[in-house]
Image 1: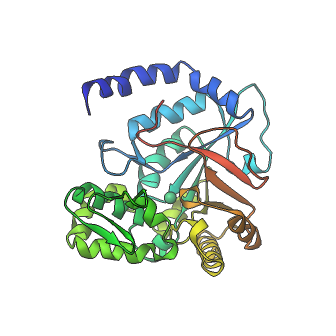
Image 2: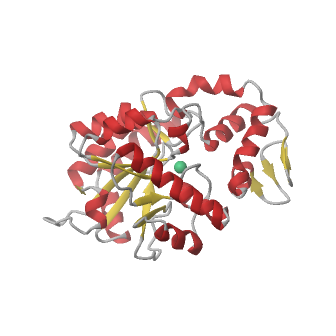
Length: 317
Ligand SMILES: [Zn+2]
């Protein structure tokens, strides 16, 4: 990281952040509530291939700030409107996507100490196969490792640097649009870089997802609840009806069987949804969907949908 960047990130930005500007900003965007969305928390450096994991010190400062300046409530209370607004503070929920193991080994103990509730959104395919690696992690690692050498070429996508100038698509976006073909493309990437499976293990603390026992142990803590993040982490808007139904029902079933509780909310991978997705989500027994809203604008969403603000290690304060 350059010195200027470092200075900005470590000195200027936190100073602006902690002066209370974001709270003011949040007031303009949504008068009553805010849902924060994390992915991972790591004790290691944050300049690594997966930007979704923030450093544990950064995480602690953020959630402590949340505790001091917001009413941090459970998602269930927010959705059921049970939250009492005792003061002028904004209600805030803490959520995590993807079900990484570090959510439970690093983040959960901090949340427990600060008595902060949180909801974890799990990709249930990771519960069935402990060696399963999310496609997003494989792509991020492949791009980092082979950025200039590897000729990624799948279907009608082809460009040596991961960008197709004809389709104006980055590899990641091309894969997102591949619906349920995603893991076939991942297999091709793995075949093209045969050492990837071993190399990526070096980043276990980032890519490893929690197993069933870890989830069960965490669910014994009344602060923590769980929701679906789909079964396979496909972008839902690119699936056909049958695939979609399968993703929604399988994920719900596995989580309910694992935890012994009802699962009523889903956070769509990559925030990808459309009208068909909403309809099937409600038909398959979910009450609420969450979407990621990177821009924190005043977009109108349906009664069943709540936008979230995503926080990564590059989130600008
Ligand atoms: Zn995700």
